[in-house]
Image 1 (cartoon, rainbow, N blue to C red):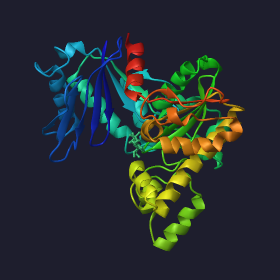
Image 2 (image 1 turned 90 degrees about the horizontal axis):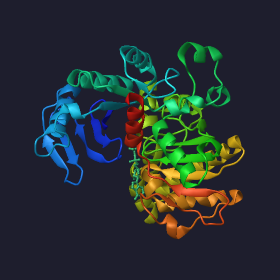
Image 3 (image 1 turned 45 degrees about the vertical axis):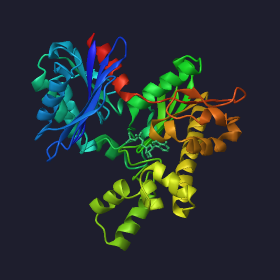
Image 4 (image 1 turned 60 degrees about the vertical axis):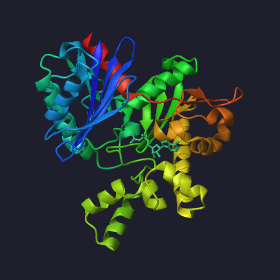
Length: 397
Ligand code: ADP
C-alpha cells in the first residue's frame, strides 16, 4: 500500500509517501508559510534532488492540492494517479484520555479530537484543518489518526496525577499526558529487538533528545512514565523551553518583571532552555561550539541539560526497578557523541560502560556500550513517519 503521511502544523505541512510493504520512502517534502506570502513547496522524490517552488497557499487546502499535484506529476511524480494512494496517516498531537491508540478517522473521531483542542490549542486545530482539507481533496480514501499522546496512556495514576485538587483532573483532565509517543513507541520496540529481548519482557529508557526533548520508561511494552506533562513544557531542558521549574518561581518572576501570565508562558516556551541559559542559541550545535570556545553560560546550559537527562533516567530505573536497554534518539540523541558520552558518565552505578569509538557515530543504529556493560546502550534513529505509515496500513488493510 502507498501511505501518504501528513504532519500538519498551523503554517506548515510535512509529508511523506511510504510503501507499507517495502517501507521505502517514495517522496517527501513540506509546505512552508501557508497563509503567508512567499509560501513554498519543497518536494523530493526518492533518489532525486530537492525542488523548491514558490506557490500560492492561502489555506492548507491549496497546500495539499500542490502536494497531490507534485505526487501525481507526469515527470517528477511517484504515483500515476491519486487512486494509487491507498490511505492517509495524520499525526495528531493531543488525544487526551480519549485515544490510547491510532484510529480510523470518522466524524466522531474528529469531534473527539476537537474536544481535546483546549489541551493543545496551537496544534490540534491545525491537525484538524489538515484532516478536513485532505478529506475534501481525496474523498473516499481512508484516513487514520496517530496520536503523540496515545503511547503514554498506559501510565498508572501514580505516574500521571499531579498533586493538585482531584477535581481539576475530573473536570478538566489536568494530568500528565506526555508527547513524542510515536517516537517512544518506535524506538522502544526497536531497542528490545536489537537487544535480543522480547518487547513484553524488557525494561527500556528512551531518551528522545531534540529541539523538544522527552524521556520515557517502557516496561514490558508499556509506557510507565514520561517526562513531558499536560503540555510539552515539563521535564528536560530544551531548545527554548525551560522544562520543569518551581511554579512558585513564576509568580516571583512575574512580579519582578511586571509580566502577565501570557508573557511568562512565552518566556518559558520560547526564550528559555539552551537559548535562555546560554544566551547563544537554541541549537545544541551552536551551544556546543560556544562551550568548546570557553563560553561559561554555554557550558552551564549543556551541564544542566545532561544532568537533567541523567537524573530522569535514574528515576525511571528506580520506577522500573531496573533497566535492560537505554536508547538515544532524535537530533541531539542521534548526533551528539559528546552529549551521549557526558550523560552516560553518570551511569557508572548501573554498570554501564560506553565504547567511545562506537559512540563516535552520527545518526546510525548502533550499540554504543561495551560487551561487558551491564545495560545495553544504543543509538536508534527515530522514524515517526514510518511508524505512522505502519499503523495506518495496519488499520486500513
Ligand atoms: P525537533 O524537536 O525540532 O524535531 P530534532 O530532533 O531535529 O528537533 O533535533 C534538533 C536538535 O538536534 C538541535 O538542537 C540540533 O542542534 C541538534 N543536532 C543536530 N545535529 C547535531 C550534531 N551533529 N551535534 C549536536 N547536536 C545536533
